[in-house]
Image (cartoon, rainbow, N blue to C red; front, side, top):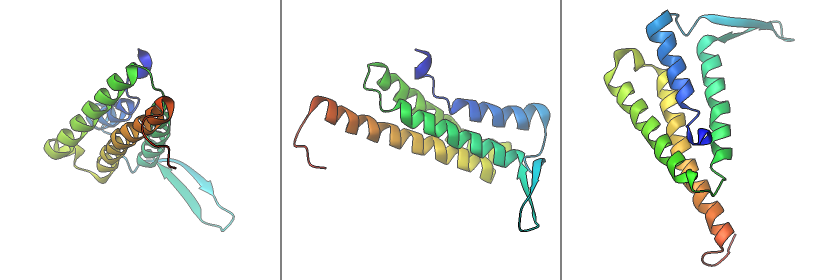
Length: 133
């Protein structure tokens, strides 16, 4: 049942904690790396949040390949996370940022990819219809 929890909710929670509890700006430099070209690559807190969110999206897509009974619950919860993100983006002034827009977009991709991958995997598992790939 723990696998039914959409992991992208952790990115939304992290964003809200950073904005509402700590007030740290997302353009705060997390670390800097000198490159061979001589420039310094800066990695900000917002970059770190997006990188973590993309990693969680990867895990969510892997979870979508399961064809168990919990996959329906997982998709429903992922859809709820997307709806919450969309409402927060439209209504909450602190969430009207490009960073939160990209998090919302990633949750939408999770919903679409989750349903698509599950349908495709179920079609292969049960051999429904013609098999044309």
